[in-house]
Length: 184
Image (cartoon, rainbow, N blue to C red; front, side, top):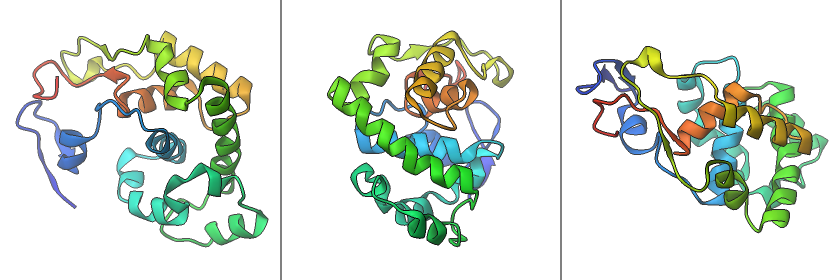
């Protein structure tokens, strides 16, 4: 594990590569959008580093987040996943990936892609917030409230407003890097 202090914001950054190359970069690939949504759901109640250290295990366990494969998972496959020490073995979280895959595919059908559905909530543009210090980073927003409510109404699980806001940050719908960070 890499741990050092960020030269721009002064905060401890674990897994500097994730901060420098992934967090906040706009994602428009449906498979990646499903992967990140699933990982943010798995993170609920845990630190982000807990999941970040297990990303490769999750990709292997969940067929690289291929929704067409995941929707076919049965009880036997779920029990197998619950024995996998490389992922968080929470039954509700594991089952949510399967049920969310079904809803994800329904959204894809309705909007031609999950990307179009999702990015429509921000008019297809990244929201750049004025973040002076780490303490200024919000945990949710009016948009995350709306998106969360819509996903819940469609049947998704582990998509509360705080989880969805973290997801929006991760996939670049929101840029919450501090103003003096090179990624701003």
